[in-house]
Image 1 (cartoon, rainbow, N blue to C red):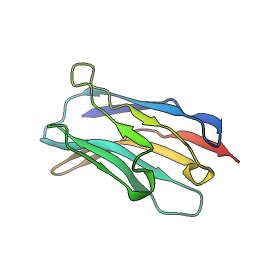
Image 2 (image 1 turned 90 degrees about the vertical axis):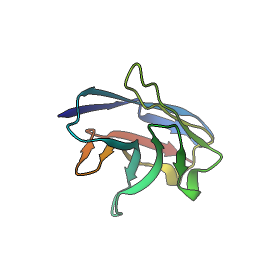
Image 3 (image 1 turned 120 degrees about the vertical axis):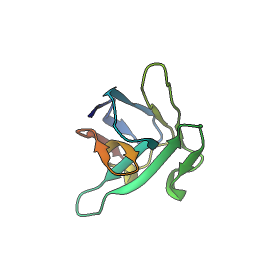
Length: 116
């Protein structure tokens, strides 16, 4: 069983920065494909923000490319997301995710609010 704890959200003005952190503990019985971040804005479906594989290959949503950076600290089991040049449309609840071959694990979510 994998437990995820999200943190780092908050209120920031447009153009500002935030750094989200995801601490993972426990062990998955199945191989981890990747870890990453998703977000869900009010009235919208949850969408991918960024993922990173165990080998360090990254994938970003087009809307965040060039502004967000995902990294991975295998020793600490964390997946930080650096968010720069934030826009009001980035406002959402952000969820950390661990994707395995048979199961997805989710953090509890952290609110990010960007004011204009």
